[in-house]
View 1 (spheres, rainbow, N blue to C red):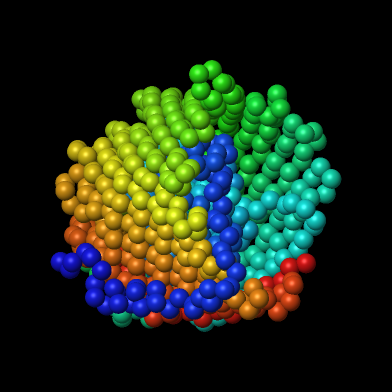
View 2: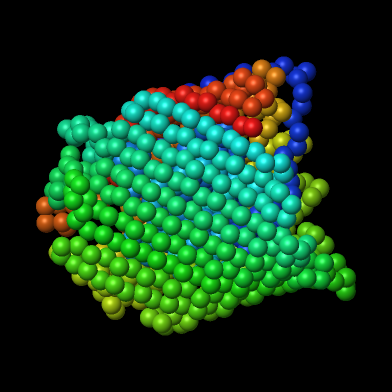
Length: 639
């Protein structure tokens, strides 16, 4: 087995790339403005909270960062977040799983504009392959067990994606680009506010001829293409200062070519594929009373997944997943000055959710649903504007499993004089068995209706330190997480594995603006996780790192962005001829991306990028290949 630390070749490539930083301007150039300190996040407490008051580990990616990196698929930027591992089965369009702190892909809850988008018919996980970055305003990644507020699916944490909302004068914008491997992408958007209404709409897509999904270096050379069409719209109406109504709808239509799979061989050239339709929607109303101290929200959200699996143009199986959720949230904020200045925030949350899955193929079919009603409460206490404490508790009434109670505690303390924030959190989590694990079956698999929910306990401690006149932020977190009753497939069915999986590690983050036009972001994660038998977690590298550098020049009309990601050695499962499994080791690798822009006018920009500059050959899933070097050029317009 190779040393899990950076290999010599990868180490040289990583640090050579870091040395390619654009030359800084002389010391007489404009000095950098301080990084904003009072950023607000929503995901940790379900309500806008200043980051200084948050005791959990959370990372924010905004639209500026997405534009600098020219991100087209959301999963590509999530790779750079501490604690996040992304695994894609082949090139663009292949199954893309996200793991937080070593938890399984279906143990992370994903939200888009407040809509839960984990698919009940596909293992209760979200496939990031089809999520384009067009119109995304903000991504918040909350790490650690979060079931106290978010219920099942949130053992690893929560990924919350928020799209843009119309403000100000009406605007229209768009971009079009093309490149190697038959790649083409583009989108149009329009948004603004008129009287009491605001609106935003976007429509776009992506296509590529691709490369072989099965690794080309194993003798596979048939290219597998992909196309994606995505549109969404948001409409807001504020008839009164205290009342606001919102609606959002999103649709994604995709088709992905893939390959076949043979036990004992792995992925091989074939005519497999999939096509699908995703429909997401939510409407809600918000009411603010007593000068905004009491805020209420009621909403209903629905997600629908319709997936067809193909052999050529013939549908071999289908799966339809539906999730409907009705929720009510009440937030009350109070202040007091008895003994010490204090801020009190109380939140009450009531939810009812129904998940349904309907699958059919030539060898199996099932149509099942499960419902759950939940009640959650949270109390936040702020003292002297320095110490912030949070306690949350939730109880779930499930019509299939025993009732369950989860909780979370967090603390944060800030030292403004030194720019230091200390934080800690502890939480419990639960993950209900998926409908397929309970009732599904194939020609080689039968569901197990006796499965019980997985449970988790996790804690972390960390420090955020501002230095150098608030131009440099250093972050460090130690986490420890334990998952019991883990559900694993045995080849013919699924069982709860006896024992506890132990996942611990360190997350490091860096953000700096040493000059007004130079921004650096870096991360490193060490996760030596083990399952209940003491073996390394599969598809979870012990070492991951990233570096992103963005530099603006030529009177702010031009920019260059350098992105470097390192993924360490990891293990995966290889299926033998009889579909038993054995472990294989996937090599570590470095990816380097370079992007550049030039503003040719106040409303027009030309740009280009080179993806996988070194043409690195790598595997994130055993037997599946990578797309190699890609070159793209495009034009962006706004009016």
